[in-house]
Image 1 (tube, rainbow, N blue to C red):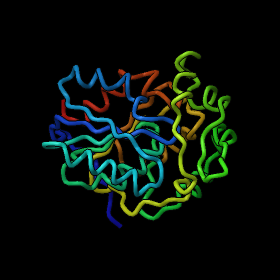
Image 2: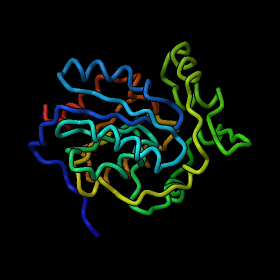
Image 3: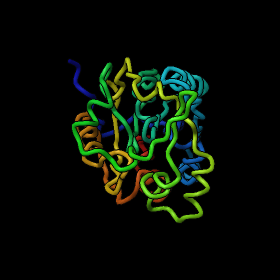
Length: 237
């Protein structure tokens, strides 16, 4: 089995960053991080996932990668980690950054892997719709997904929550880009959506350069400076 590529001491300098959001959010979840990256001189694009299938989301990311003009750091939050693991083998991708994100191996059953750790509280708040989609209840979203945000901000994000196809929950990647690309990981130590110890396990398995952020699953909003700094590091700044 191929070993993961440990980040080099001198990462490839990239001027482009592509951001991929998770299941219960949209591209606006990167709104606190984007201006910090732009201030650092990076060209930033946030993918708007259709959330119909893993294949569709990976294709949406590939379309954005095709528009980049050189080395690009590919970044994901939450479920987006599966998307960048699938699409991140693109030759333009110089590094991967996982923010409290899924990092399955190719063909791996993510749900079975997660079940080896205590269940995160947010999972109890999943609401499935009759037409095959799913989203978090308001209580789960406010308390377990966005627990360290002020109520006004959290409720605003709840209002734009994406509905995800239930098919995504059983989807498996065909690639594990973290095996061939330098990888970085931000663990959210107060996460109630993905177990923090599970995040640590995935980061360690990737041989990722790892930081720990004392934040909720939405540390990209509550701690944007730390997340932006990790992305900038992956970009060689």
